[in-house]
Image 1 (cartoon, rainbow, N blue to C red):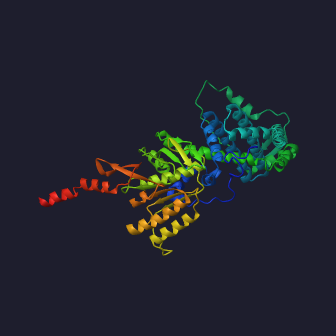
Image 2 (tube, rainbow, N blue to C red; image 1 turned 60 degrees about the vertical axis):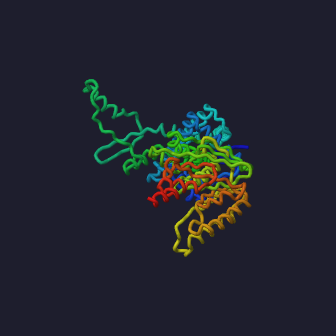
Length: 511
């Protein structure tokens, strides 16, 4: 099979057609923040659709892993960066060809763009072959590029570029200025007046002296006098300028679609790597997860909320890492514990992990085995919407009904403090019904809750608890540990700290 895309292994995988809307879970999981930071500074490439369009095949994920590993090698990264820079210069020349006013100047900038394009591709072929990439994506692209450079289309373009540049470089003319009159003549062997003037002043030079000359910048725009001089030169020597006009007509679409896509798509890898670099510099681990579309046994060590970590690393603040695992029939992680203990952050990290894994990106953690899900659903508490006149409980029920109806056995669901607006008894009843349906779907789920009874619904549920500092129950460690929920022990510890246990109260009342 020939080269298709550096991001998508097969046409089945992508690229996506048309507009790719932001997934509904992005806001709740702070994936919208990650997307905004990853794509910042890459506007010309429009990388947003690639961050939203996830993969569904194990092989497609591994395809990206291999490409990103290659790009982690300095010599390959430098090769791609050089190519991207050259293509950026080519686009700048094309933009000049469009926005400038004078016809022949527009034609020359179009020629310059084509010349830069040819140079960029020849350099890329040479350097890419020299660095010997190991990924299928870059090897297939390198082979495709070699074939393209030896094809009739590129050979014809390069030949026309060289012939036209040679013809234009051979143009010689003289300008005679007398008062307000400017006369353009064919070059007749006249001496170089600039060299003559420089020679006159050479005799006054006494060793090396400070250069007081003012640097004159060359602007791409021409004034009307320069344009008229060029028109007269073209009238005197029409052939090179006729070639220049024909060149643009003959090579209007010289930019190959596959190369344009490669130039754009490869930036996705570069942008994501640049985004996580600040976290790596602070010692946070990233790994290429082992993904499976069949096994729902999961494990991730030293993981963290990437959006939060990126902010903390920018401020040189520590980041708490957590582990989790699911084995055998376990599908649902129920997270409980004191408020402000990191439960919501853990839930977001779980959702982020699965989306980043579907993108084929390195994920936060030292080692990860993740299920390749088909969709991610998130339900986080929202403020009441006065426009639709729905209360929070009705809104929770409506949203959860929609999620359960759309979820499949391959889905991941993240729920955070649902039904907190109702009584404990009602919340327990409703949560049981929701989790029962999720169990029937056999979907993976994280449920952050204040209802401890949910941790004991069966073999499919796993209890994890946000830890407190043993010496100071009011202090949070922000670590989430796999253990049985015990809110009573936490309450007793707090009561002990503030002298509110039964025994202490009796002592105080007796005194």
